[in-house]
Each structure stands twice: as structure tokens, then as C-alpha cells.
Image: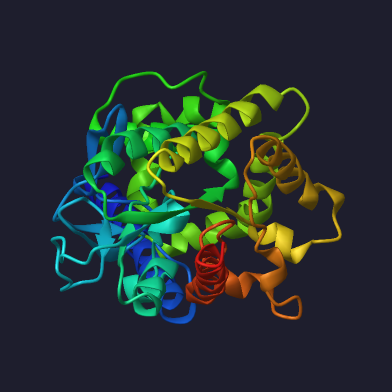
Length: 347
């Protein structure tokens, strides 16, 4: 009897060892042959209530975002490794407002559109104030807190991501920094994430296993799924949310205008919109936003024509990612912003 149980135990342990070996080999293969990026951010990247009620990036920190090391300066703005983390005395600065799209996860800082603009505008400082999880009210909170103390800001660019109309991403960051304030009614997905063991397991695997992410992307079709989720934010019945988001952006523009600072608004597209431009739904968010912003006196830029139609849309984004640009996507965005900033000088 003892010998039989020992044999069963050895069989179980051997089976587990074989599974672990196969899993390890599969993980290694994905890391070698796939371009999948890890997801998630280290807790030390964020601080609560950095800009009024809004969280922000921790100042002078080295942290992990999407599996790569990132660095911030004394303001909490992302900078290149080894860059001067203090103000350098240049008399003018370009202020970039944005969320994770502007932060540029998984892309080296010099290859983000912020880094490229630093090279193209060497006479000006480029403040990349983008914070993962920001929504439109956070841009307003940031401008109210930062701009009055920085008269060197001479122009501003807000890269609006289509999910800026919701605070879902902000809730995830609030959980990291231990902020308990509610931010609206949570969705079913968010309720599931609120179950600690599910959320912790998902966060652990997303930040450590590329195999897990590849399987997840393949099973869920995340680029299309995430597009459909953001499209629902612009569906009938959500008009009030979109209108509030535009009011927030309009208030940002007015706060800047009071200080003589022009604002450029660029609406960042989702990967699906470049892949399926013939789909009528692909036009819905930009059409609604452009109409509402135009009424508010804003002239948003739609950069989609700048992306080569004969180029695979996925090349402009991180692997299996619906909205975060690859280095190639950042180059296109840098071209669009560069042109818009130079146009300001002719007005």
C-alpha cells in the first residue's frame, strides 16, 4: 500500500515537472520569437493626488512599465535614461498632455513622439506630462496645478485617446496607489477585477508571462475587442459622457488661453480604425468629437490620413495592442504634431 501511494505521488510530481518544463519551454519560445510586450506598471511609478485630485508619475523615479524601465524628472515627466532631470533654463517649453498613449510604454523614450519632438525643437524644453490612466478631467486638474507656476510654457498639445471619456484606467491606477475614492459605476469587468485573487493573478501574469499574454490575445482578439469596448463609449445613450469630456478639454483650452498659450488637440486613432477604415463605425468617435469640439471653438486634428494606407495597421501599434503606438506609430504622430506646432507660428 505504501509503495503504491509512493508511486502515485511520484507520478503526480513527474507529471507536474513535465508540465512545468513544457510551459517553461513555451514561455522561452514566445520571448524569442514573438513581439508580445509585457503589460502592467510598477507601483513606484505613481503617486496619489499629485495634481489636485489626480494621480501622477512619481518624480525622479526609475520604474517598470510594460516590462521596460522608464525614468521621470523632477516634475514626474517621462525622460530618457541619463537625461537632466531638472529644468535646464531654456526660456520656452512645449507642454504635452496625454495618457498612456503619450507616455509611450514599451517604446524607448527617444523613439516616442515626445522624444522625437525634443530633437526637432532643440531650442525649447518638451514637457511630457502624460500619465497612464489619465482622462479629460485629469488634464484639467494638471493644467490648473502646473501651468501657473511655469510661465515658460509657450504652446501645448493634447493627444486625446478615445478612452479618455472614461475613468476605467484611472481606477486601476488608483488601486495601485491605494486611493479609495469611487470614480463612477464599475463595469462587470471591473467588478471581476475587484475580486482580489483574480486581479492579483491577472496582474502577476500580465507583468511576467508573455506566453499568458499571447494566449490571452489570441483567444480574446484583444485589438478588436478593445475597439468594440471603446466604441460603446460613443454609442446612443452615452452623449452626456462625451459632452462632459469635450467640456473638460474646452476648459483646458480656456485655462491655457488665459495665459496666451495655444492648444493643439490631436485625436489618436485605434488600430481597428486604420485596419477597417471602410467600417462606418470607424468614423463614429472622431465625428462626434470633432462636431462637439468645433462648437466649443476647438479644431481637433485627425491624424489618420498621415498613416500609410498600404502599410499594415498593426505595424503602427504594439503587438496585439489596440491603442498604444509602436516606434513607427510614434514617428507618424511626431510628424503630425511637428507640423501643427510649426503652423502655430504662422498665425
